[in-house]
Length: 417
Ligand SMILES: *Cc1c(COP(=O)(O)O)cnc(C)c1O
Image (cartoon, rainbow, N blue to C red):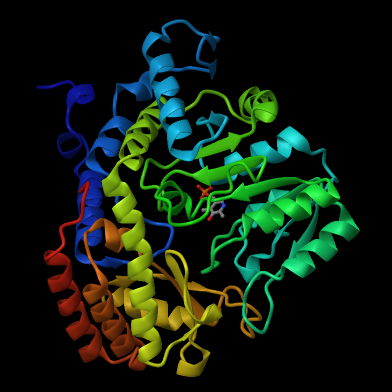
């Protein structure tokens, strides 16, 4: 009998093993349009599940608290050097456990409780951690929110300027979680410089596009840049902070010992692998294809009568306002999921419904792009979505679309599974 400690997952715990297999099957057989999701490459997954999991490494390379860091120091240094080359940043901290902890570390580096900060409102596409009321960032800090214009759903830079001048925030956050257009980092930088704020660009969603050169980079414009590593960047679940050299010490101290203990070394190794991939021409082609696909999906939806926030997209994501279809976002998202098309319901700007029962759905193309799909497939997806949203309660339609989705997926094997 093998010791339980050496048994495989299937041997030791078929219950959990079976559930993971089922999730793999779901990811293989469905069209995953959640804008923050992707397929991590096999090598990234392998690094994450490696023996690095067993090592404790509080501190930074060359300045650790425990012995035995010969290998981990090299892993972390490689991750940092590769990411510096990809993003052109002066300093990078790869230890934040995810995007929200990365953002919290930035607050801790520069703010005291009660300080004023400013960010894009959640209902206009901002993230919880940019000062939303239910987040720690909205309750520990005095959060001022800017929005988008009702006429074109674009960030109103004049409003940002006016509010920043009036409130003089310590941190000015830009970047979003549901904004389909290019963020004008230069304009934000001008405003921050004039009012004396530190500009923080949160590129959690678009870091893959920035790395691939299809969205302008905030590096050199924002003194601090935060990101997740698992969305369009296609790495392990994690976070990172890029900053100017002058802020390096403050940021590092805020992450450890300020906010966290030991870094997840397997994740760091996975991030180094993702950074190696991000430096290739294949990655640039992938980033371009994400945008091409989002544009194709947006066109396909608009041709079929869907109304899109801001009238389209410049990046990887689409916000669809279903008010004119007479179908609430949740009803649509639920029916789509049953048909194998997975997305999330989402508020649209100036939503007349509640955040828990909003008017829209959010769609993104990174995962489908990682499967190798292109514009022709996006048009098929738009057609299938139209079929479902036109008849969300028609079982025959859902079942026919489910079959078509399976067939489409079979032609484009998902990486990393
Ligand atoms: C996803 C996201 C985050 C948070 O990342 P988690 O890893 O989920 O904590 C932060 N900011 C933005 C803009 C995001 O889209």
